[in-house]
Image (cartoon, rainbow, N blue to C red; front, top):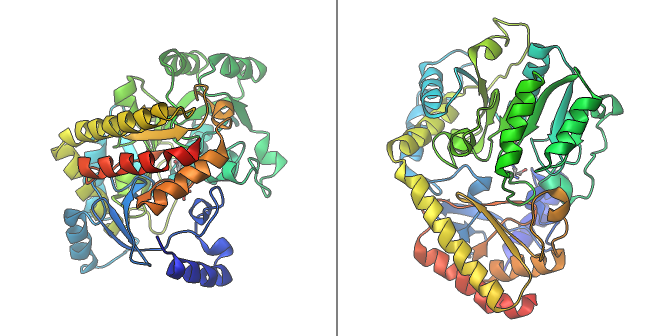
Length: 429
Ligand code: KE4
C-alpha cells in the first residue's frame, strides 16, 4: 500500500488543525505511521486518497451499521436538505424519531436529542444530579463517556492512548465529584457507596464496554450494579452510545435484561450524521428545561438533516431485525477465523466479542477490566494493525477500541481478513 497523498494531506492538515485531526484517535499515535485520509466509502469499503481500497471494521466508530453511503439514508438527507438544513424551531420529524426510538428501546418514556455522545452523557449526568440533588458520580476506569470534564478521569479510548487519563484542564473541583470503580468488580462499587453514603447521584457505565477494547460485563456484576443502585436510591445510567441500536433494537438493556434509569445514545441513532440523545422515565426527563429546572440546550439539536438520517436508519433496523442476527453471525465467523490463526501460530491472545463488537488483545490473560486491558503487548498490536492495513484491512488504530462490523461486510470480505492475518502471523510471534 502506498500513502504518499495521505502523508501530504496530513502534513498540510497539521498546519491548520491541532494534530492534523478533529479527533485524536484518528491520528494513529497509538500505532505510529501516517493516518489514512479517506476520499469516499460505499458499503463495507473505504477508498483512500492514494487509491487504496480498504475493508472497514470501524464503520465510523459504530454509526454505519448497514455500511457506508446506505442508499435510503443518502436519499432522505438529500431530499431533506432541499427543504432547508436547519430552523432552530420544532419540526415533526423530531417527534417521529423520538416515537420510533422509544418504541424500540425498553424502559424509556421520553428522549432529548443532542449532537454527540459527549453531549448526551454530560447532559444525563447533569439531569441525574438535578433530579437527585446529589453531586457525586461513579464511573469505571477505562470506560469512555465523551470528553466532558466529569468523565476525563481514567477514561478509555483515545484518552488512554495518550497515557494522560486525567486530562490537564480538568479541575480538582470537578475531579473530586467523579469516583472511580473497577469494571466487573462490584466490591469496588460497594466500597465507594459506603464511603460516600448519600452523596452519589448516579453510576454511569458502558453496559458492554468498547473503549478498553470490547469488555463483557459478568452477569453477576451488571445485575448486582442494578440492585446496588436501587438499594441506595442512585440512578443507573447506561451509556449506550456504542451498544444502542447495535446489540439489538433494544440495545444493552434488552440483551442483558437490565433496566437502567437513564440511557444515552449516539452513533447509530444518527445514521452517520451528528446525533446524540438521552432518555429515561417521564418522572426524570420532565425535570429538563423548559418544563423542569435542569437546563440543557443546543442550536442544532434535532436538526432536520440529522433527524432524517437517524429516522431512516432506525426504520431500516426496525423493519429488518434479522440484521442483528446477521451481524452476530458474521462477527462469530470473524472471531473463529482469527482465533484459529493466532492459536495455530502460538500467539498469546484474547478475543472478546459481544454481538457485533469484537477486539483482539495480545495477552495470555483474560481481559475483564481496564488493568487487564493494559497488559496487552502494544508492539505486537502495532505490527498487527499495520500488517493488516498493508493488506487492505482497516482496523481501529488502537488496542483500546472495539471493532464495529457493518452488515455490508460479506463472508468473502471476512475470509480476506482472516487470510491477511494468516500472512502476517509469523511476524507477530
Ligand atoms: P462522541 O462525543 O464522540 O459522539 O461520543 C462520545 C462517546 C460516549 N460514550 C461512548 C461509549 C463512546 O464510545 C463515545 C465515543 N466513542 C469513540 C470511539 N471509542 C469515538 C471516536 C473518537 O473519539 O473519535
